[in-house]
Image 1 (cartoon, rainbow, N blue to C red):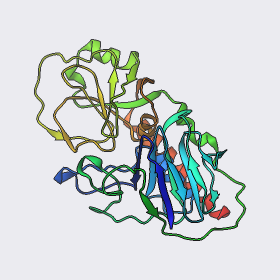
Image 2: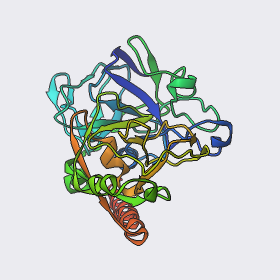
Image 3: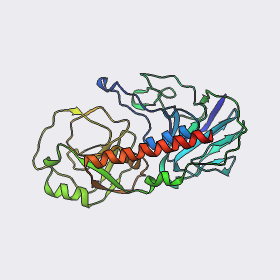
Image 4: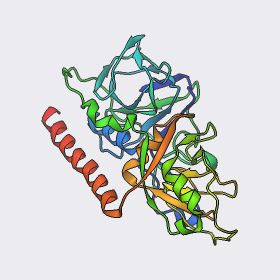
Length: 316
């Protein structure tokens, strides 16, 4: 028993913490775009933080529950409701058989994660349940959920415990953030002084063509000093490639393992969730940080998770 999909929404996929160890055969890591919201949703649901969950993008599905369960939503505010009664993110919610989960329009953020207590039944492909739609790998037949799909829970039964606690909204301040921290790439000096200056001083707009593979930006053209060829090389999530038209592309969770465009900078790991929650037409500005500052930002997040895990252990 679990839930059936009555309406698909814009794009709802199953993601776990990603498919590592296969980039050498051209397979992206995939996994959640916003790792913070994904991990927290699982922890609040009492799961391992890597358990498969739903990643809902911008416009949510309609889910009809065929058994009791507990669920947690973390990330964007997509105005969720149960049986037309508004519910909150960041806390465990008791669900009864027959309940219907719906979403409204995105009020803030782009992606929300739904974790179910005990997780969902899903076979792994290449060591992961994460959906990678271009290759039809992982998730539910390698595609987004659609009307008529039926998903089963690992855990059945309903807990009657009272739930009066939630994660602090302060953990999601990055949803309001429009400044993104970066490290200069090794091809930084290939770009003109004007491009280098504009990259940090001017804003860029998220284009509608952005997706899980990459966020396309519109802004000042970032031109190179001279036409140069770059041998195809390995690239990481968060790399900012600049194609010949001068408009940068931020590589995201489903991005290819190699690329041949020069890279002007790399978004630090701690700020990838910021990008993941930006909607089309929203603006961002880049800020340079040192490698030490990047490490410190990531350490701060992990320290916060340690505190959250300790708090959850006391509540469970």
